[in-house]
Image 1: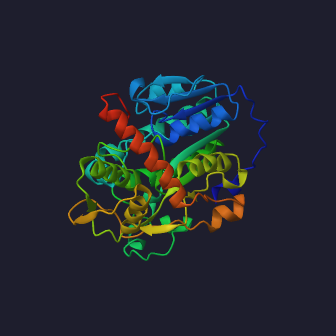
Image 2 (image 1 turned 120 degrees about the vertical axis):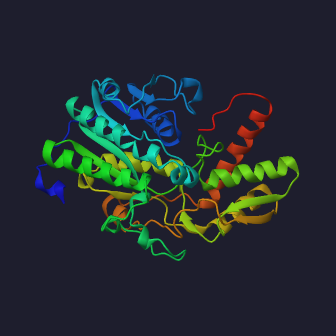
Image 3 (image 1 turned 30 degrees about the horizontal axis):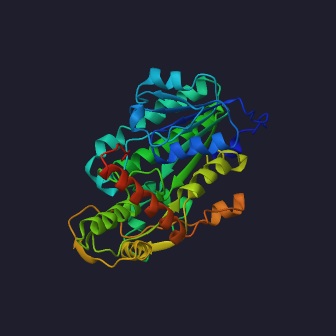
Length: 349
């Protein structure tokens, strides 16, 4: 590991008025991360997204919000001015439909991390977090719904998902080399399907839990109790609730044993898409007739997170049961749907 080749100097304590930079903050995970750090008492948080402010899901009081396109180098330097810690979650991405259809947009996110890690290093930031993805894993290991859980070493030999997965893997390499060669403490988490309130739930970028919740809300509203499922419904995944995700980001970024070392951040509770639909049906108190679109984007056959490493290092792992997280998410999407039906503006990602 590259991390072992450098002396790890101890950082001074992070002060409540140190600048924390969070990119992609108009989106789901980074918006919740800004809220998380604000609630912990940090008073100088700079949140950045290229979307106009009215499209941001979360506007956290007291947080400096900037609209900047971080694929441009000058904007990254502006974002990192005075930075002590940088959390880079900015990317053009979405659910499987978006990832499979817009590979060029996904690949172009390499510009964001390339410029951000350099800007953070130049600005003298002490810590740099990068949000990678389970899409970086070798797809040949994910051809069966009863797949074994993926451990960190399974990213190599490399055969990532086209577009999005390759961008993540290359950006991981940038983070590792910036530590090895330039001494910037970098941290890399491979997210596994994050869901929860304040996430994308319509418009083409939403992921499976949100899409299923919305479809069931729509079916009930239209009194048309049918649901269309992408694929045969036997694909398997694990889904991590947003509260576990932001807590995990904090823990990983402040653990020196994980410098420049990719780590899984996901739930190990694997379910099929059919089971996911059944769970949301129970929450909604309805039973729907299912149809299956075998030509729709559906990704790999199976994927789950092996949490052995994160448990070993942090003595922690995401633990919110899927039933609990889905109930919270369904209520929020139902509320958003009702607000939009009234003609009021809501964010959809």
